[in-house]
Image 1 (cartoon, helix red, strand yellow):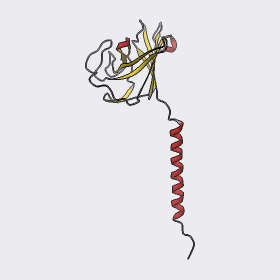
Image 2 (tube, one colour):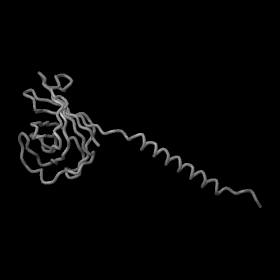
Image 3 (cartoon, one colour):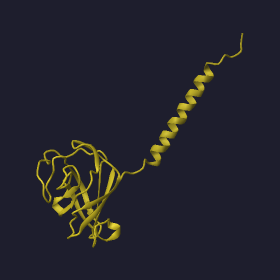
Amino acid sequence: MAEFEYAACDINNFGTCGLGTITDIYTWEAPVSPTPLSSYCQWGYGYGGVGAGCFAITADVFDTASQTDYGPTTIFFGTADYEAGSGFSIPDMGIQGDGVTEWSGYNNAPTFVAGTYTMWMSEQNSPQVGTLYITTPEPSMLSSAICAGLLGLFALWCSRQRNSRRPTGRA
């Protein structure tokens, strides 16, 4: 699962959230390669609108400032007013962040790219800015242990194969 954190900021000049006051932090999780909802993407721009290169997912959104769990919420990606295929929006919550594209692949089979993305036009009054953080968890210790165990078994098998082909020295 990819973990998303959107920090909305109120700053006096353009920059990142580190230069201003964080007013809200919204979090949600989604598969790294989600199956997008169908029939949400169409031409149209504007606040809460969707662009030509967009897709939508549903995720449980949590607001850490108010400790509010919004439950299943539709999140659009590719909603930037100025460039179709970038940014995101949560229209039901009045949140929009325009920025670079946060995924790779096609909008019918996207894969989120981990990173830190500066977003413009957050839900805050001008100057509007926010930062979207996308993280993908490291493989678990269990999966690492399984891989190491399989590698060990393979090495043991190779060793036995090599030893079974050696002549025994008997005439």
